[in-house]
Image 1 (cartoon, each protein chain N blue to C red):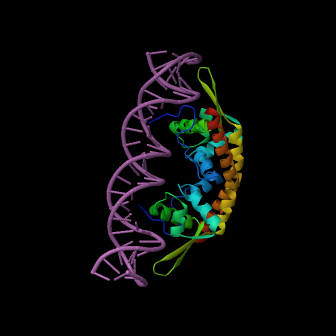
Image 2 (cartoon, each protein chain N blue to C red):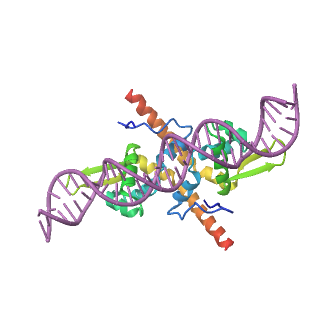
Image 3 (cartoon, protein in one colour):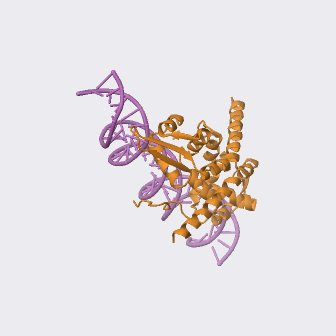
Length: 122
Length: 122
DNA sequence: TACATGACTTACCAATTGGGAAGTACCCCA
DNA sequence: TGGGGTACTTCCCAATTGGTAAGTCATGTA
């Protein structure tokens, strides 16, 4: 399996913008990571882990690395012991979050609709 | 494996709106299906198939069924031979598409950025 | 009788994704 | 000497997702 050296590789040619954006947000925890970083500004690895109940260390690092490659997240390593690594959103990360705003609203409406449906059914 | 009778099942409890929205759009072709139906209003199965180069019949029906269950797509069957089935967006489908607008714009920007990067690298 | 049409199912397979558990490195503290 | 904290990595397995190819059904047409 080839390794992406700078970036690129995966991230095929896209048919439309949705395509290109979805590629970057798909992954079980990426939406939540974006949300956590937006809410707190800067977070350490263990803090993010605590903020995403159920995430494994493996997935968290994997997602963070991909988001870093995709230019959404900035990773700052401090040469200390014990190690300290801080994550924050880049400008692109913040603009993506903004672009997700309307979608989030729609999602909330959907949750509400489902809740009413379920309620009515019972 | 249990079958969803009315709806529900999969579609877990959501942590946030993004979550709930993503659940409904994730799937290799769903974004494109939304786009096709938005652009044309009403499409038959074979037309959609032609509009999504590379999709298999299996995936197309599977995605259309899920989107119907999720209330995004309306499916109208005409009792004719050979059969005729027409797909269109529901109101929720159209509002979802609208909510995806900003994300699509962001994606276009991303494509453009990548293009420039690649160009600069060569 | 045989084939085509449209919208599917079904069975089987491969690839991708995610999870769990353990290991790593370094140092501090009791 | 042993345990804990931090930020990981590695291996291995299970579940999900997507692809291919073939079959189905009812009728119209050659």
